[in-house]
Length: 150
Image 1 (cartoon, helix red, strand yellow):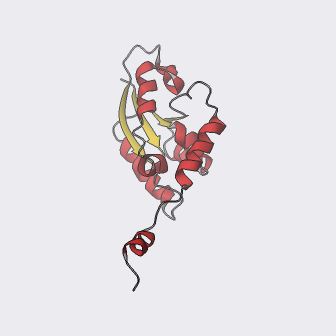
Image 2 (cartoon, helix red, strand yellow):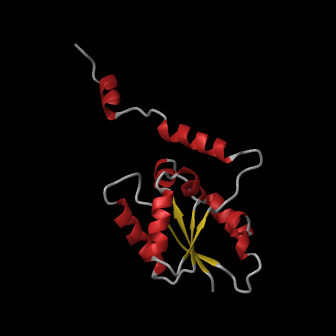
């Protein structure tokens, strides 16, 4: 049985609430980067999905290795870097090289789902940047609004 893992972007899953719907949809339809599994004799399964350690922390590489190790221990054949990681992560090449060197028996594949018709990768990146950098009210601004000055 072909076991597949997915590595998603912490910002898209944690900050934007991405449920990885498009990743799973293309897996189920054997579309996007999952088209490579279309003609396999066995039925591939997604054995696990995790997100990265977040941008950038002093210990992100070690945290990422630990997370990937937990996936490799269940006997994965491949780990897909989700489309969000492939298009958005400024550390992708560094992490990909580290992962390939540490886990040489695992295939690391860039991408999961395709793009909606008419949506270019540049449009996707621009929309994600806009969503991730929108100003949110801070707790101090909320407190200032609720405290009445004498």
